[in-house]
Length: 95
Image (cartoon, rainbow, N blue to C red; front, top):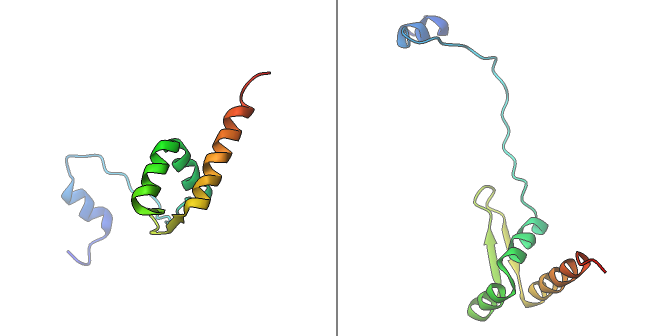
């Protein structure tokens, strides 16, 4: 069996199914996370939640589960998030 072509092995294993072979392609892992995208996520939590986390832990730590990058936001970073969130909301208003 080790010397049989892959097409024959597949036919023997899945003889009741229509099996299609695809060309091999190279795969590559990448993660699109950035500090800015994490900051946007934190803005969506809202000021109350951010303040609560800061009071409890002193800083906000976020780990990306895909690439294992660590992002840390201290009180100054969080204040900038809140200020930029307020500025973004006020710029959406029609005058």
